[in-house]
Image (cartoon, rainbow, N blue to C red; front, side, top):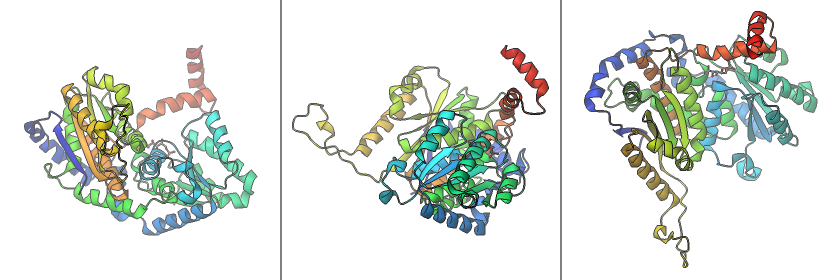
Length: 446
Ligand code: PA5
């Protein structure tokens, strides 16, 4: 049993793959010997074996405390300081986690904030936590990102009003840089419990650091097993042998497809619980590769729902797409379709089959239909959805992203493009220092 990668429906030939071996060798060395661009952000490569054990234990203790004294945890963060935790929680917990009666869930509800600037969202959030005891985990590596900073300002004030300054401080957990940034200073001044985002790990590669691990542990997800899975990925995907390294195969094949004008990759899954995994993956690949006028555009679909919407486009639209399907092989839940006397819905031909079986046939049929329609399909299979395989999947995607970005010829670890909107927003908001830009933008806006 293992995570495996199948590219037999990709249309890529063995000789194409052979032709990439030399470049792969080069980028493998760039990553492992830290000689490529962005090499100051490669801490995630070995993190599963060299993370701070003392901090890890402290994190588990804090998670236990939150589980005991809180009905809800509000996780404040955006981008890499948000998507990973949400992806893991949605993949590994109950589909209706927050709605489950507490007796069945045995852990706090989880809400996310600071990933938008919507006043309606914030008002509704404050309403939903009104009668619950809450804790807050505010996550920001820079400590200065506008969206989470605003959310934290509002929620800090709310907590202090509700619990008093001293008690509120015992319910606020900060995950940030070890010394830099406004949030670090604030945490020190207020005496909040603080966890560190390592210097050499960028936001979108940080899910297996306290950024993701604290909220995930609060949910009761086994963080040791998650790290074991990542550890296993680290070992397996360090093999330079392309024939044995699934992670490198994925990186190489998506680049070959990109070079043959397939510029959009759609991540598909048949499990709704994987929706935020796709959101996390889109950030990982989009922010890492989309630069210098290059990069595969990462998109995602939820099947079978989207077979009734975007399925049309995938089957018949522009042929610049390929799909990567996350296939979860074993489904723990066995739900059987029963025979009915009347058979008015005509479904008796499925009597005795399980929902899992029907879902599998939908997957198999769709792969063949889309391949026939000219959409290469790559399949990443995991035996079942549990902490171990999910941790391994995270590592698989992260490593493939580093390799893939280097193959593409970009620095996968920076994100210069996200500054443009920020500068404009700051200028329009009247932030000191942006006066000249403000004048220019306001003129354009009329
Ligand atoms: O991947 C990244 O670096 C970004 O998406 C950041 O995670 C995001 O901008 C949030 O940054 P910060 O954690 O500094 O608030």
